[in-house]
Length: 85
Image 1 (cartoon, rainbow, N blue to C red):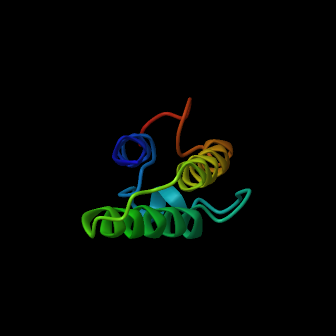
Image 2 (image 1 turned 60 degrees about the vertical axis):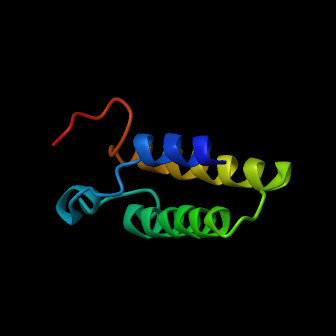
């Protein structure tokens, strides 16, 4: 789970400035998705620090959610082939 969280934090621009995240026309609200996913990651980091062991379903669910958020961010030009601003 720690490895998955590290991969997601590396791949997704949680610290992107608001002006880059909200450019007007978009397919899904990038800011809300970033906030939601960051909350999920923070929650799992707290749970892991408290000694909770994730199950396979937990890993699968977080990975699936992260892929879906990444896909929307990619369509909105925030990740992937989009140039860095």
